[in-house]
Length: 200
View 1 (spheres, one colour):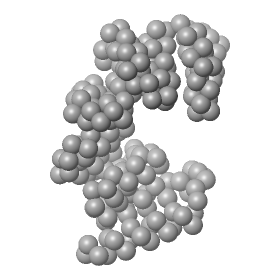
View 2: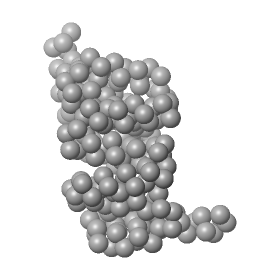
View 3: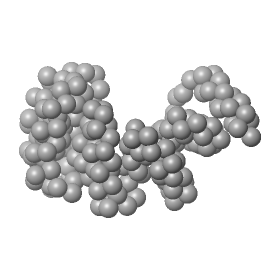
View 4: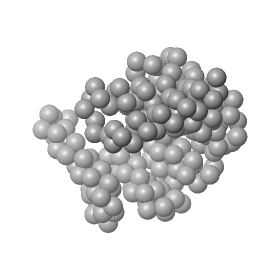
């Protein structure tokens, strides 16, 4: 693929993402249908229909993509998210474990695996997964991932770990000049610290 063709493809990808974000689903479908790569086309159509809560249609498209590329981690991840949305946590867990085997450093899949354990009421496995993520990938965890880790730790009632993760989220957001509601963030952090102190 030439450089200019590659740039054009990224523009099309960004356009589809923007249309999905602004809930212009009919236009997003039209743009996705233009995608020459069938795996990408089916993946985008899956995302669009999942965004509209048409989960059966979305799953069909993800499965079409996986028939062509069974180990495509992007499609597997999206199918796993769909399984979580439709309360099929056991199936989701299998998918996220498969992604781990293919891509051992896929932090998003690992976090979603922790969520799947949580929804299955396997709280110790959920906590252990989060602990492993932080231990192994501390310097690779993104701002949004720190936030998600904090949320899940909060649900697991591990307020100390939740406060630590939220601290990292805030410091990373400041470093990257990400706009956040600072008053709301500080209020939430105070709440976490208070809960943490009760634990101690």
